[in-house]
Amino acid sequence: MKETLLQRWQQVTEQIDKACADSNRDSVTLLAVSKTKPAQMIVELAQAGQVHFGENYLQEAAEKMAEIKDLGASSSATQAIVWHYIGHIQRNKTRDIAENFDWVHTIERDIIAKRLNDQRPDDLGKLNVLVQVNIDNEDSKSGCLPSKLDKLIAAIKGYDKLSLRGLMIIPSKEGTDAFERTKKLFDEIKQAHPELTQWDTLSMGMSGDMDQAIAQGSTMVRVGSAIFGARE
Ligand SMILES: *Cc1c(COP(=O)(O)O)cnc(C)c1O
Image 1 (cartoon, rainbow, N blue to C red):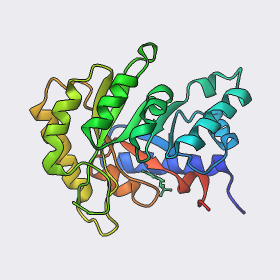
Image 2: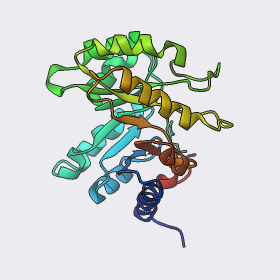
Image 3: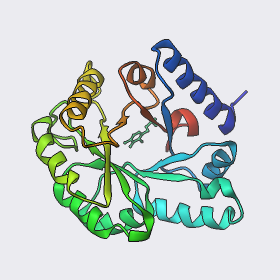
């Protein structure tokens, strides 16, 4: 029999709990990646207790956020949703991101960080940000090269409306020890910058590799298809 959305979500949370137990890890945050999936599914999961949702496309996310507001006008569950932007960021889209999201995982250049900082509305509190690292130095991949990380972190540290929380990666398919190397980078930066008191998030692992990512130190897994089913 085909599993329902709630059953798949439950299975993923159990898989995460088991991966945590197997490697003596504290809890890992589940980010439900809802790109291409309808608002109704987000509402259903939010009502079951899922808090964090990730979107990649701004227009699509804006439409769903508006729809969810209508669907769940009286629901505290939908009001509690924490929105994460995990897509590529074009320079002319930073204002919409700064105004509508709680987290951004895909900072790769100072100019984008600066714009998000300048455009973050005062009444929303700080925007949580992660630096996306191009850990395998791939030409085709987004992300800050490891060699340029120090400079980018130094710049973001100066932005008072951003809270720098950690790193994010999308490893290359053949990537073998990318999780391990990113965890090492993450720890080195923490050591070198004790003033980054919010440095606590390592966003890595997706539907196909969340167990390995958790074993290697991920604190947040971004899971789409294992919860919502395959995308078109
Ligand atoms: C789509 C996406 C995911 C989720 O991928 P699945 O393999 O469906 O779990 C995670 N992270 C990013 C950045 C994505 O774009």
